[in-house]
Length: 81
Image (cartoon, rainbow, N blue to C red; front, side, top):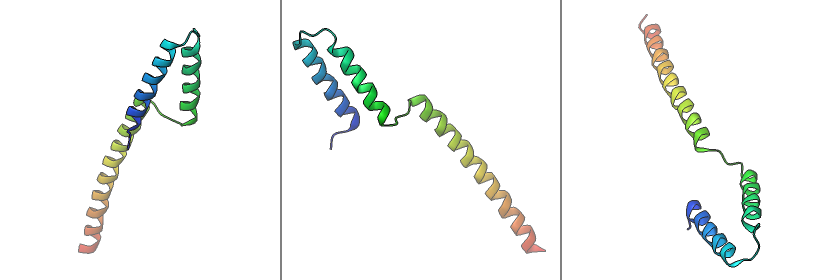
């Protein structure tokens, strides 16, 4: 199976070859606009957005683990009384 990056790189190479062979000067601009429109429909996120969300998830995971530990300690206190 072709990885998404490989697919886009191959597509880009093919487009560049097409542009190099084509007399039309604005094909590259049109292809970039077409690709941007296609990517917008895919609901993609930037690396920066992904990293921010990952940091938030990691922070929340730590908070949940802390709260779980606190709840267990309180449950043990209640059971020992």
